[in-house]
Amino acid sequence: MLKRELDYVQKVFTIKLALMDEEALSLYKNGDIEEAIRKVTDFGVHAGDTMHAHWLHFYGILFVRLHDYVIMSHKEDNAGCGCTTIYSPYDDEWKERIVAESVSR
Image 1 (tube, helix red, strand yellow):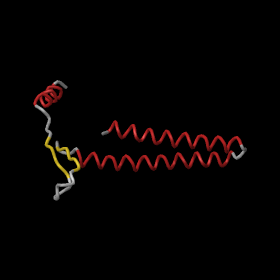
Image 2 (cartoon, one colour; image 1 turned 180 degrees about the vertical axis):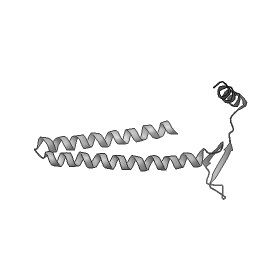
Image 3 (cartoon, helix red, strand yellow; image 1 turned 135 degrees about the horizontal axis):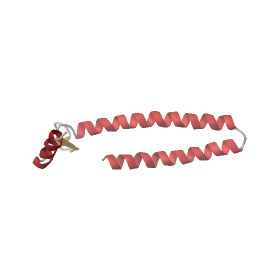
Image 4 (cartoon, helix red, strand yellow; image 1 turned 45 degrees about the vertical axis):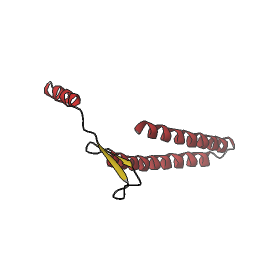
């Protein structure tokens, strides 16, 4: 999920950034340096705000879907929650590794 989201965000941002670069360069070449600077600054502020909001929203999705060893998925035919849950605790090998690493510190 995270890799897919990172790829999506990077792709969208790269496209928008390339368009902004073209626009700012055109303004700069036409002598409107102040407008080019304003556009780039506004773009940076907007991109930061948008990414912050996007990742907060994505965190909420991850939190709901993957909390307390439960993986939740969308399932429309479940009238109760519209989801399905799968309990996925850590296996014994993983638990033993964590204990061994904790004790050795």
